[in-house]
Amino acid sequence: MEQILLLITTGEDASLEKAALEAVTAARDLACALGGSVWTVGLIGGLVQPAADRLAGCGAAGFLAVEGTEFAAARYASDAAAAEALCRLTGANLVLAPGTSRLMRVLGGVAQRLGGAIDTHVVGLKVDDGTLRADRSYYRQRIEATLTRNRRPWILALEPGSFLPWNGPSGTAAVRRIEPELGPEAKRTEVLGFQAAEAGEQTIRPDADLLFVAGAGWTKKQPDGRTHVEEAAQLILEFVRRTKASLGSSKSLVDLAGEGQAVLPFLTPLHQVGQTGATPRHPKGLATCCHGEEPHVVGWRFIRERRAINLDANCGWARGKADVLYVADAFEVLRAALRLLADQSEEAPQN
Image (cartoon, rainbow, N blue to C red; front, top):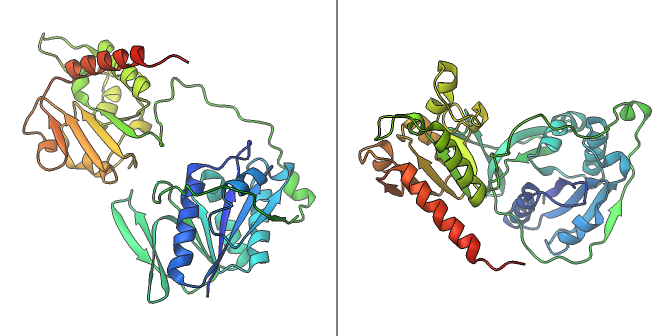
């Protein structure tokens, strides 16, 4: 029988990230698959009771917490001490955690302290003949491997977006709090606050339902023989704002900036989707003015519903890479779509 510990951190308002709720689903399903295994939730944060109450109906055998102002903000020394204390108290030989930036920073050190093993970017868990096997991706998620380890504890950092978020009943959870010792050396780093980098409008939204990808065609000459980059930028930004979509780009469009050509001013290399870019996990995707070449399309492997707009009926999207291809002018399509969105906004009841 395996002892499973799920490590979760809470936000400043004691909220739980989507990745944490996905990890709850993974831990719950794993305990059922292993048969007779006991799993416990370990919470770390400044305030944990609201988060524990949110998970009261998840089926965990118990709730442990390291709570206090010293653990409210992300800091390696305090977070590592808290995670280590929770692991030692439970004696867990399997430790699951969402692959958030805060936990990924400390899990490797915790594994070293416990003499265990760690695997990150885990996208799937399965049990064969009582043996846990973890699926993880390599080479920008183009290669998937199945791993199993004998060393315990085995820490598994789950890739966000790989599991369905848990959405069960809440209640009142009984939380057992522990207080790991923090020496002066663990408090040398003081978190004063957050300072965001100077940037424009946020257009990368990992939790959005729709991925909108702009291709290099937006900057090419249109039927009137001229380019309309400024209008393209306005149409794209307005569409992304109204639909709350996440904005992506093809490599060719990002590369235009380095060639001195007219580009969409809000695009950066972080928007690039494909073999040398990101591999997002949105439920739906819409590609515009993009040919659908293989190096770009590999970044769409986790997009369940794919649609594309292109004037070329023989583009790559037409060759089985998209569920629906609209052979049309993307400028005209977006103008019409924005008119419809504006009409819907006017018809919506005002609060």
